[in-house]
Image 1 (cartoon, rainbow, N blue to C red):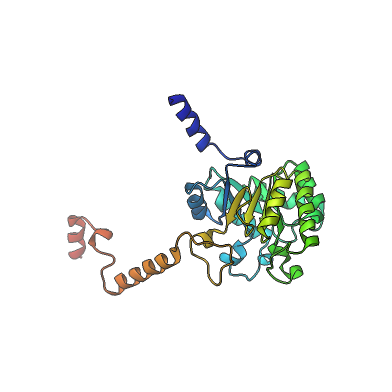
Image 2 (cartoon, rainbow, N blue to C red):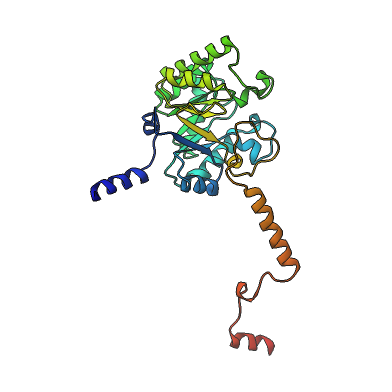
Length: 289
């Protein structure tokens, strides 16, 4: 029994890698959340997440941009490095921002390399289906683990005409199935399915060997991901249908700031215990000046 417990403890604290995630196909369910700095990475890791995605959604929830295409590579490297400094058990994945993997295989490798070398990421994620196969194959050949992302791809917001559910028509659904199969054959270790009908997500999940990670894709995927701020009730505006808030930290934070303000205004902060004091000898010397 003692040996079994020791083995279980070792497995629980071991560093999660891309091959370990790929081996989780079919279960147990995989968990992933976004994080954008040291503190959020610590929270995500202590909460037991399998993967931390330094998502380009940082453009929205941290920098206040209306779309993710506003964020650049330097900013993504900055946030990824902050997450990596937390040294999480979870696998750290750097999101490749818009135009960093669209122009050439050489540029794609170079830009992904910055997320790995300078940002400390252990894998990268990029959006798109078969159009991105040359880039994905180039990264895999360079031995950079790649997570795919199909369905509603936020970097394509203008081409899609907004954030719309994808794959609702037969031909569109078939294209997404083919995209998933092609990316799987190219060597991705996992595939994000975003904003697609659950029945289609179920089919793609069964058709490929890599685990699928759903966000707005129903319960049949191999895992689930949500944005850190959405999970904790820190986001603003209308939330997508698939978001569930598991805490309301916004209300708690506002209450805390309000309490601080009131304490300053009524003179109760700081009190004597929260202040530094001179020795009696030094205090007397100052009074005698």
